Length: 225
Image 1 (cartoon, rainbow, N blue to C red):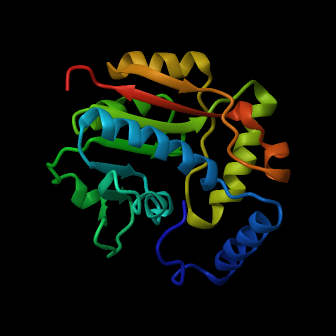
Image 2 (tube, helix red, strand yellow; image 1 turned 120 degrees about the vertical axis):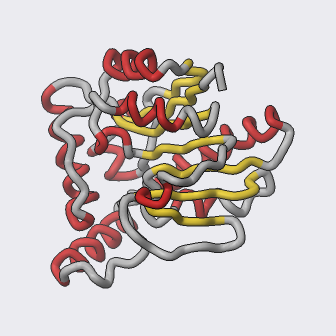
């Protein structure tokens, strides 16, 4: 989870962030390129269905890197991002609200995006988060991970540690599998409209390390919204 300002981080953590960014550039580890493309396609379809420019909630947004890539498209009217830290960030189309202040935010959204966040909240508790978000929007778009046994789980944990240690993000003990994701949807009282399994997130070396079987994108709907 990249934050807006890392200058207050200890020097060794800032060094880790710098080294991580260099490694990503060298070995084609841009995780946002393919994700943003897919989110763009699905959000455009929702805009067409709603017959209007849409307002998006970026839940667990970090420094809103995905939102920054989505904002310049005509079908996007506004994007609100929320996360656990305090920050002042606002542009014509983007607004950041800390989770503490977001509790009192009572506006509705046309789409909620949750990118690689639910597994950090906890696989067993994810349905509660989805239930809460389904009160704010009938469309919820989730990008997350599938584990496939012991080795796969610990590979995901290693990659999560590499990507998030410098930001003090909790590394989960387990991830979704097909069965637990299906149960999460049922407990959330949502309907899965689309599931993109085997989603290729990375190119190059990063795709060889953590290949597409570990990534999925799911579009959920609250049909009672």
